[in-house]
Length: 234
Image (cartoon, rainbow, N blue to C red):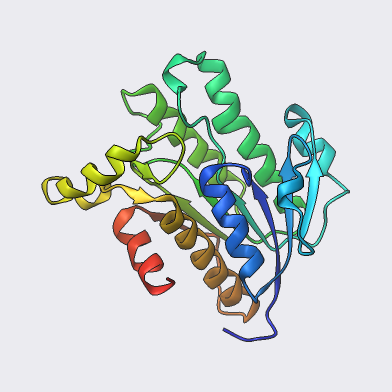
């Protein structure tokens, strides 16, 4: 990477488990000059010289960001329903999992972003018999339609180390990785965040150096692909 290649990132979900770690990694990255955090309320704990908080009404997110946020290079969305999706109304799940992240991504592209990192879930498929996986599949489709120069789709299975996963599972589940296909292996929130940030930086630097694809590129990363990234970027 060239030392003079810097970027501005915009993050959705920075108060969450994975998003919070993403924000920390961006603040620590020498390549990241500025981080725009899109939130529903001002969060004092996020204060940092690199961080600009933009408070929005999520239902009018795209309109509120239009014209007010510029110079974005990388957008990262780690935003979702988390625990309790089965107890939520389908329309509410769709709004949180599709409407808000898509509006965020569209606003980021309008602000200049060339790279999008979108978190979905392993098994995402718009034709799935499982409602949640159908929603994830639609989320991916809408991300593709925005035609970023590079789109990274990150499909974790169980995410460990967060407030929604019992600590006992974090100790037990990895013991049975040998019995399931690698794409279904659990991943720690810190490892998922490292993979998303490292891959987004790699893609942006390539684009900035004129080494990017001639057409919009999409990369789907499940556990094996993400593992290569977080192992290489400890």
